[in-house]
Length: 296
Image (spheres, rainbow, N blue to C red):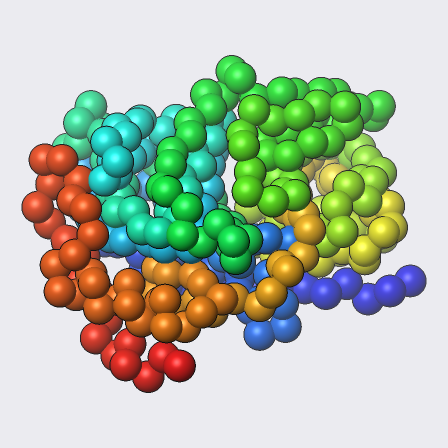
């Protein structure tokens, strides 16, 4: 039996009182399919006076994929999108040549105790799409296809195609993103649905091919092989990510992704000099790092 490739991630503070675990990129695994960034935020109880807003900041060369288990966020961006994100929804924002967005507490939750738990992932765009026009997609939880497998596994197809179901999200390249729930003491044979795949359980331990896997530990699966996933007494909820591997290695710096470091340096300079389109009604800008001159 092959030993599993495990990624534990590192914890940092995204906003006041809001810690995130960054699992990708990792030294041992820079990407899984097109996914180059994997942040797990929470689960956390935020007090009424906690400022967890993330103000206006830019992106290029990627798509952000936001998914909540608990809580609510308000997304605004520079192409005019205003969207409340609730548990089970998928937000897919294509940055392309450049977009600015913010993620804030909705007005109805501001000044109240609240819970927040979710994932934010980045997908690297294919090189030929890095300069595409920015765009935004929102798919409500009720529009995500769901299927129940033998043994009771409930699978939500968030992005891509699996088990005869296809997500309405329009991805830029072959991409797989599933939300799977297993009943207590059950198991599921996870087929090889993509060339690269990994699983991550935010809260419950599980077993993969007979090996114990802790909560908040990503496991990269053996390509081309079916994986046996088993839940314990609490059951298990986990996500599957994957897709076609990157056609070309990308650089990541701050909020930018590109195969060309000069494109990243130009975006950094543009933001620091007051460029990028603004978000209607917002004046706050998250300052960018100034050490982009070393990019080459």
